[in-house]
Image 1 (cartoon, protein in one colour):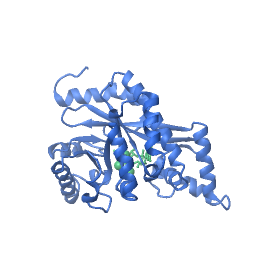
Image 2: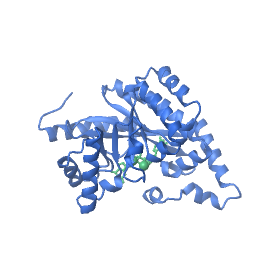
Image 3: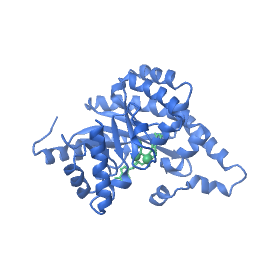
Length: 292
Ligand code: C2E
Ligand code: MG
Ligand code: MG
Ligand code: MG
């Protein structure tokens, strides 16, 4: 699985290259069938506040239980879904599922925890986006203020006018927007600033080099300061060890996410993990028991 996730070329593409003339058609059909047969699942990964040491949010990350290939990560099918346009119906399924899962999370007592999901540029370009979103939310009785949407620079800047319209609509409903994978794009923040974004997520390629590489240290430090100057909160993605965590704490990072706390897991496992590990972390770091 590690090898598969790292490879830039997906297993499905490789697998199908030898199968015949139309490899993409196969994965498209499989995606469509997967959607019909309910083969997708949202895994969740916690995001923790470094000031209160508490769980702030959960990020929904899609997985595909493929009938032949087993559990697939997004690197193996999201691109194909974007190419084919199937990301649009899949994206609505994701948002619908997020709304449903939010109710489960709230009934577990986590009433202040937000749920974030990733939006691709194709979803923002859908003509129906501004009509479908409020319908999905009202159908499930979801309070949009509990939702966050993560976007990459590419998603926002591919068709900025369209993206602006879509993002204003969700922001007006009360949802929060975050800029994902920050530091990996080529654009300047001036373009991005027009969008109603309130959170920057530092890409894990930077987080993973801090304390090992002086340049990474200064890049991460500058991103944190830049974000704060612009009144944005900042999250470090991909935190894997205590050294990285301590660096982020001492440099004023607001929030963290990463394998140090938890891998993305099925909702139920995540809820159990929160009960155990995260409450422990909060108690340990704040020096006071946190049983609430
Ligand atoms: P992302 O939104 O930047 O998500 C973070 C990725 O980093 C996730 O990979 C997560 O499992 C991984 N990660 C988190 N903490 C650590 C860590 O400490 N170390 C390491 N090495 N990795 C960590 P995942 O789940 O494979 O997702 C990859 C990308 O696929 C996401 O990047 C996002 O761009 C896309 N994606 C995932 N779910 C969705 C979705 O529902 N819709 C869309 N459009 N894209 C999605
Ligand atoms: Mg994300
Ligand atoms: Mg990211
Ligand atoms: Mg990413």
